[in-house]
Amino acid sequence: MIDRDRLESLGRRELDATVKGLPLADGDTVAARDVAARGWNVLAGDLDLPAMIIKEAPMASNIALMAEFCRQHSVSLAPHGKTSMAPQLFARQLDAGAWAITAATVRQCRTYRAFGVSRVLLANELVDPLGLQWLAEEMRTDPDVEIYFFVDSIDGVDLADAILGEAPVGRPVNVLIELGYDGGRCGCRSIDEALELAVRVNDSAHLSLCGVAGFEGLIPGPDLSTVLEKSTAYLGRIHSLVDELDAQRLLPAGEEIIVSAGGSSYFDLVADVLGPQAFDRAVRTVVRSGCYITHDVEMFELTSPLGARAEASTPRLEPAFELWATVLSRPEPGLAIVGFGKRDAPYDYGLPSPVRVVPQGTAGTRDLSGSFNVTGLNDQHAFVRIPADDPLAVGDVVVSGISHPCGAFDKWQYIPVVDESYDVVDGIFTFF
Image (tube, rainbow, N blue to C red; front, top):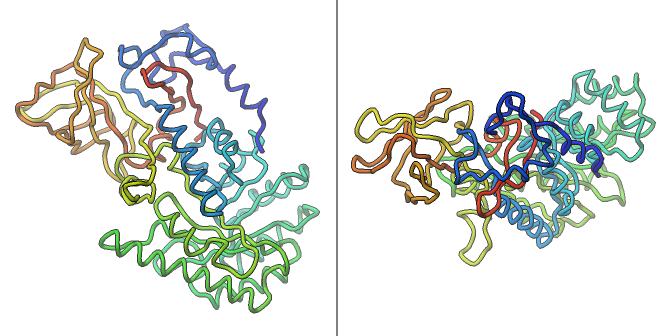
């Protein structure tokens, strides 16, 4: 499912002074596989700040916990690779039982294939000629490659069929009909429209209908309970579409089909409403959660069934990302300017949340218990409101959790991985 030799080649990559967060002087290099031998420790002040780090223990726990959730609910996991764009992490997810890696663009698919990922679920419509030609070439040259994509229009089906006819694969290309909702992104807006599309796919020469897909993660609502209710109803419409396709004999007879939905917030609803137990025919239910691997302290902590929505006795995902940055200025009472900004941290679904302070010249930490609040970001500066009597000083280090892992990974080409003592033991390359 992945090219181990290509992964091993990442260990031979030379890290140098251009890599953000590493304390390498001009002319000083270290092979990625030797980074642990440098003896860098984040608490000791050995990294160049700001620095984003990943804690190994929580990340390993998250990988195992999500795999166990999928086993318990008899669903397959195709983690969304756009979250990390890190083949080293894809390998760990696949080793833990992931069925495929999900992509959103052909560019991402190309990266996956460069590292030997053999089963890719392109959770998007594919209509550009160059992308379709690339897909045809990949499937033609490697019989073990499986690439799936979504369709939601007759125009899209006709376009794909025509281009694949000019660059024949030698076997049908699997597609899933995407069912959307009013005001949403892609996807057929009605079951009748989806049924008409299924007929067109089945009449095509080069496409094969293998299932149905959707995405509930952006359904709006004034509060979480409303979103959960609306998401459940939407997933029920996907179930109804499968039933109607089956009743009209528009799905492959006697074959397992794919039903796919589920981001990082409501995958429990997908397991309940669209799990294999919910159908009278053979179904592989595929959830596409990606952010679980590092989790966060806000966006998915508040919405995940393995976060704040979990029952007290349920094991929970843990935030693995931390952003370390120095206090640059205390220009006013109750205000600190800290050395990180939009170039370093996600800011689309909540700003970083300071959790600890490391006073200058010490290796000890002080928990903040929510007393600090990031109120704004510039490119390289964070505005942090703090209690007027807090002893925070210029030169202290503020440690923050993040919200929305996708926007954390894409700010860093290389992210150090630390153990429980904050020793740097490894690192993750990203390919955005």
